[in-house]
Image 1: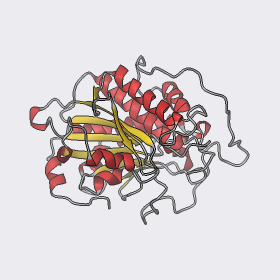
Image 2 (image 1 turned 180 degrees about the vertical axis):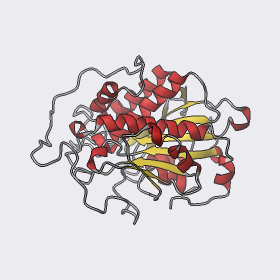
Image 3 (image 1 turned 135 degrees about the vertical axis):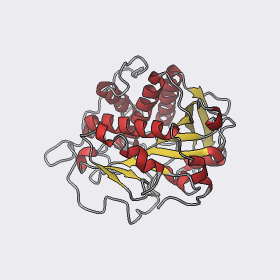
Length: 332
């Protein structure tokens, strides 16, 4: 989650919250510093939302080997390669600039980084150019700040959703774009690059929804999953609500808005969003944000709910494009 923007009034961690398992009193925040085993291939799993497989993905992304994935670092490159390789083995369609799944850019601090972009083309001719973007930022601070919850958790969920939708074997009505954005922590730079200079395969004027996942690994901190941007009367609220009963272990809070993550690059341009987020006051932007603190059971459920929400939006009969064209800033 972005460090530069001050929390909006609706940003939900202004109240005291219980410590997440692993940061509670008497726990060891230092964790195991040993390197993980070989990178998980992921493509051969039968159940996309397999907790063991998702744990392995997150452990690699938040490992000391990747050292927090700071933009332009070796860890950033390894993380990008990991996501791009997974997109390739899943069979996603490339959505880049002639470099496979990568959309390269130089950030404001002169770091060379990239977005990792893939897609499932839509099946309905009338809605073929319309798209739903599922996003999670890939970067963190580096230098020992490993960013397990912020945001290896979101990227892990993104990969699981891509696996699930490819396993379905049927194309959605609208195109679904999977975006692992770079340089979010310093001002949503990857998302801004995407929205200003989208790949030729994508018509930005026809992006109808953003489903964003940032810090989705700390459900145990407050036993609440926030689905931000789900204002009354929105297709996003309806889509989330259609699947809440299928995830009875999650207490989902609807409503409220946010400009605190990559969703801002969409909602400030009139594109509505659902932003899934869990509180993590004790270890937000702290060195204790490590993989052993993640609530993996809830993470698998959050990934499942997020994926179902995105697919419902992609298959919706509603005039989502008309709603976008009638809007301006829809962040709050």
